[in-house]
Image (spheres, rainbow, N blue to C red):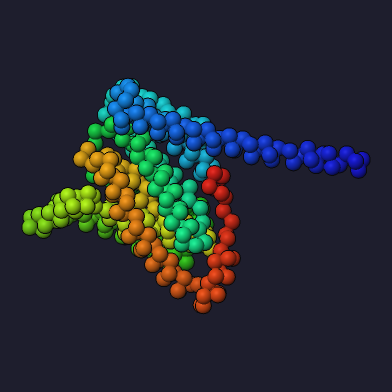
Length: 342
């Protein structure tokens, strides 16, 4: 009997490597699908091959992103992937305006949320910068899927609807990841409410200024925008610079210490959705889109670093050695990037 026991224990432990192999195969399949989608998008950019190459890229990327989001959040990848595939195929084959717009919004929302939930805790600032890079890369990949559906919509309406839906979905997920509202504390409530107010103020102020601003002020603003575009090639996105990038930097840094950092990270959708829809404007070329990303990120990273320093000054230990020890202990466990969060 004693000789058979180790064999039975080894037999029970055997499925674990199999699960790891299956997970690795799914990750490889996901990257392969993204590569296929980007290859079709490249054909469309270079105007080589069939005229519908961008639409194939849109369907492939939208489906892959939806499947990845479902897998990351503990959902049903097969069900949601099939729905995304069906919606994408119907949208590009029927040439229905509402269907194309719906598919593009779905892709933008799924991209924005996936780019946020794919981030991992960052004990140090340089690691938080890496997470901003990961979120940006995912958002840019999704942008090819969004524009590939060729939606005919109002740019402002598309941006507002995509951001609102992505923000609502992210908050629903973060409610579980961040241990609910009761775990926030007074400072956490101030951060979340302040971030929400900042989003509303930035968007509402721009819209009110555009619609009801004095003619002289509007002309000054438009002249400044034209000068920046003519001189520098592009202008940064305010929602990315002031909210999205700092939120990901500070949120990932905070998540290495306490799970409430998810509430801050949620505001990163202001970056991810903005970059996912950066190609929607017909007047925005490829170079200008790249410059928008380039001009928006560095100032946002600086603001994120400032937020980290203020947070550590208020809650962290005193002294350089104590801060180094605190960084070494800042290893709150969280599933790795390619494992389910829930």
